[in-house]
Amino acid sequence: MELNSKELNSKGLNSKGLNSKGLSSKKLGSKDPRSKELIIEEISRNQKLLHRHKLNKPSIDIGRDYHNDIILADPHICPNHISINLVDGEWLITDNHSVNGTFIDTPKGKKPTNNQHIVGDGDIISLGKSQLRLLFTEHKVAPTQAFNPFDNFIDLMHHPVTLALSISLFTALAGMIFYLNMPIDVNFSQLFVPAISMTFAFALWPAGVALVSHLQKHDPRIMAQFGISFVFFNLMWFSDILESIVAFNSVSNSILPLLTMLISVVLAFSLFWLNGYIGFHMTAKRRIIVAVSITVLLFGGGYLVDYSKQPEFDPRPKYNATIMMPSFLIAPSVSVDAFIEDTSKLFDNTAKEALK
Image (cartoon, rainbow, N blue to C red):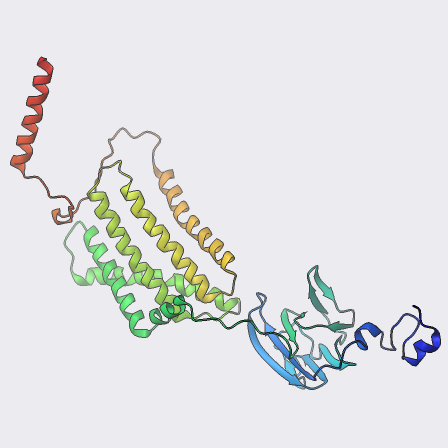
């Protein structure tokens, strides 16, 4: 049913159903006036919360100038960038002729405000290189989350005592590896420098992860990154030792060393997954994809480098060259006399079979 001009004028609307400010009667008159309280959240590009403001006033100014209600440090934002006003129960955002404009995030992409725009609960506003999320007081909060077992483990690993023990154990294991690989006898001072150097080299990984997390405006949690990383570095040392023991006790064409190498792959994936869990705000699916990608790049790249160094034809025979002390043998070794006796019996049986 259409309204005549008298009915429209009595409602303060024009022939298009808009009032003098250009706002639809469906949006202005159909809802009760909302509270003056508005929650404005400063969020990162990944929509991680940085700051939260709760304001109880009908007019809010946002920009870099110090007279604003919310002061942003982004240099791409104008001194008086936007104003948010409560008009007839609706929050209306106004772009104050800013240089870089103001955009409202929609499912179809960013939409410019075109000077004025009505915002709803949960809308995200992009201004400069910053983002703001608007929430009404009746906005439903996310369900309470129980403590994750990983959180308790991470809290234990980033404790200063645990961290110091992990780094000390890593340095000791590195020194032992250098000692075993030395063809000549060396003293402690000759092992100390390479062990410390390797410790600093491995420390670059958690430091780099924390730096990237900080640059993306996340909480870097550098102590937790170091604690988790060195715990898994030590586990990888032990997995390498286990792989050597298995190779020492198996024949050259056995698949057991390959199976033990999978332990290192699983440990590396777990480390990368926890690095992402600690330092970055991302979905579980994306975290798994990132961890798998880094693991494949690390082990796949290492395999390709080793494969490229192998000649197409090697006239020399290949054999298992793993040398360890007899105490690492799982099965008991055979004495020389028993070996000679078994060999003689083998030749005798072969000679008897040949005479048949």
